[in-house]
Figure 1 (cartoon, rainbow, N blue to C red):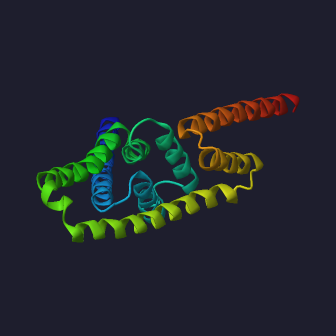
Figure 2: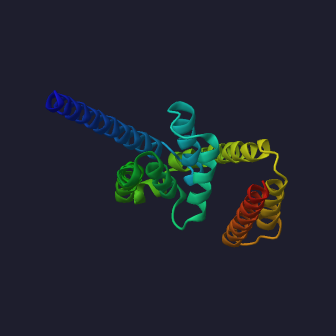
Length: 213
């Protein structure tokens, strides 16, 4: 009886392992095709693709919470390198670990690599083409609108928290960057340091409160 139970238990574990492997494989394919599609049809840089990633992984698939997506975007923006690739890395790691990172990077990098390779071969013909020049000017206006929409969505998420320090940081970062033309790197570093100090202070307060109880 015990041997039969062990055999049945072993079979069930194998079935569960196979099922989890299949689920992981499906998720990786979804990550790849989603990032591939977004990267292939995104014009305007990293902020645009981050917005589309939010719609895909937060609103459509419900794999990531909206607040967590803001944290991932902050990490992607703070790290060196292209924000589109950084965003793919942090989202891929969140969803499927190291395999998710490699899958998301492949999906994000392949489309622009192929498109730029093709365009570079005919660059001389494209450079003087008036139709393509006008098309790119029109796309610039659309890209500006999309980036403004992304900024609004991200800002609205912070405003909903009704946190005074977040308001101060957001307004201060805007003034420092746009009015005083402070380097964005310094703005991000200062905001990060303030965030760390705040977390440490809150941790001490909660620790004192638990000790008093």
